[in-house]
Image (cartoon, rainbow, N blue to C red):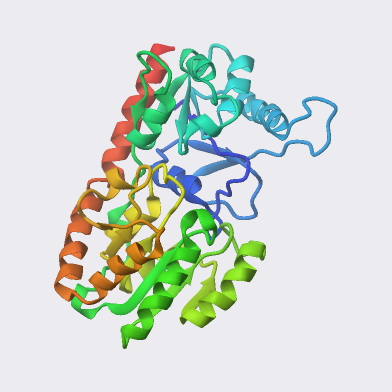
Length: 361
């Protein structure tokens, strides 16, 4: 079997307890024989072949970190001799590899707005990408961003997925903890401060309820203490919000399976919204921002509320906290909605796209 080589962005860690959203997705979608390439980690996922990419820290050429990463990747490509190289979220690295291996089939999967990426910022650059490789977007919102300014852009959409069978059993709505949960990166773009402010306004009027935040500035136990976090901690204490810091992904899912309400109050236009999908799959009643790809992910299985002004977010959370029947209905609707993104269907979709990319080249 000729393998597919999947290339992670340089900062992604392909390891349990350290994986970000892209690594988790790649792990879920890996087919037999796939090989994943990324930055060195001590204990990568054991069920998928992994090749560490170690670019030299100092070199006269290429000078950029992305260029050095591409040079190190090229060595792995020559070793593996794959049928297809699948690059995630780095147009600049994809183009560098395409120049080195002009006859090798490649795909580029975009997880974010490409208009802010090196190698894809302009319509001309995006057109050049389409000539060199098949482009895949994780949501229709990302597809539209890529197609802006282009005529006849052909971009496939393969949504992020979730393995419903691997999730912890969801607690029935009536038996769930009276917890309002935030899970994700604790940064302004994710609306962490809006969550704290909304809970501070609500908790005095919600006896028996608590609010909790899981997460840090980045994924992993070594996440730094940032100025944003230092400023947020006293505000969270005053609001009665518990900040527990980073937790491994399995613990996050377990918390979602128990919490009555999960809030995804992003200011940033989420390209997809994996946290929202996980919350629905775990049976939590969901409040989410109507930004980016979140609308198409949650459909009618969540309450949509903007984080600014915070009164809108607080009203939505308060509505759910006061209405157990509404929480139960959203819990059921969320599970049904999440099942549409189960990994089995997405693996089949990805397999079709891979075969088409190989055949076209």
